[in-house]
Image (cartoon, rainbow, N blue to C red; front, side):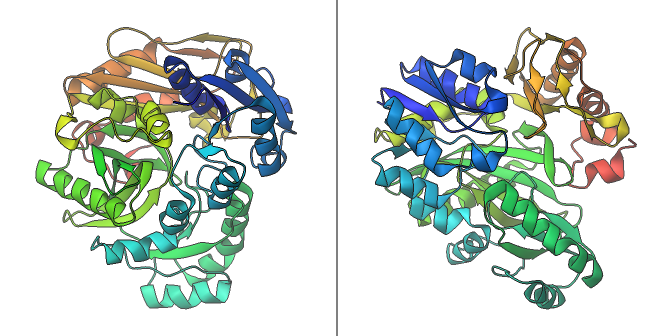
Length: 445
């Protein structure tokens, strides 16, 4: 096992990785930009080092500074978290060139399946159904031509990264002309890669994903499914595990995800994402070659620390589990608490957190880097916390989450807690009738 790792990220995921490392006896190095100097991961890490100014391009996306920080501090490996450089094949290659272990997939894995357009082609070869769509698009003219072939409406998507960035629903050629350049620039700023592609828009679809793990030698296991259909502007807001789909369909989704990962001899944690239509047909969307924001719900129903599994596989220790040993128990729900005013069209709410009280009690977990006096920088994602509730059944998990949110106090900024309470009280949500357009069609905000 590694003696020291560098965490190439910030916020709650940096703290999550730090905690997993500490339990394994691994020393940690936290990196930070000038506005993150007093963040909780920096304060708790064994060592910390500044890697640049507030803009991500000069710090968390600065490959040279990250590699230098790892070498200077004597780290043996780098954990990229999610976002930033976590799905960047060139960064993974640079780590290898500098004799640093990249705690994630091999560069060839990322290049093959992390690029969403390439992943679609691999899924076809692996006999996994895909939504009709295009290859990589470099120009607006190419996009317009493909949109005519696919038929409007279409989804315009960034080929790299995730989190809804660079993604647009497009309903006409004039709409595509207006959105294409802005989507490219958003993808370039977030992931350093402006490449785009198109897919047919699937109406009234569920967004269901399979958490997989591979040892890089062809052995792959899954940790069941998650429903991530509650989304706003293609960004996930609430996730749960398992989904409310029929057991047989869930099994077929898991088998498809494992089959695709085996096809490329995948290494480490990955997530195969699918759309499931009203007729229970499913289509492969993409594979995220990193740990997901919503990984805690899978941990809560299986009792497995997925980040520690990342360490073990990256260190060459192989998988800790065979499929038959992985069991799912109960139901887990995660809500993302962001610094946004959901009563005012989710207007950003930067500022200083003047007081915090997190919920507790049975089955409640809080992943957060926020403390009283913490100043939220306006430069990054507005995620403040993830609250996760586990219970033996979905109705009990919903009741437990409602109780937890009612206990939570975050003073000084507006948050999405009122929004989540509305979701949990919604009759359609309570009976499991959730789709990616749920917020637009089923909620009045």
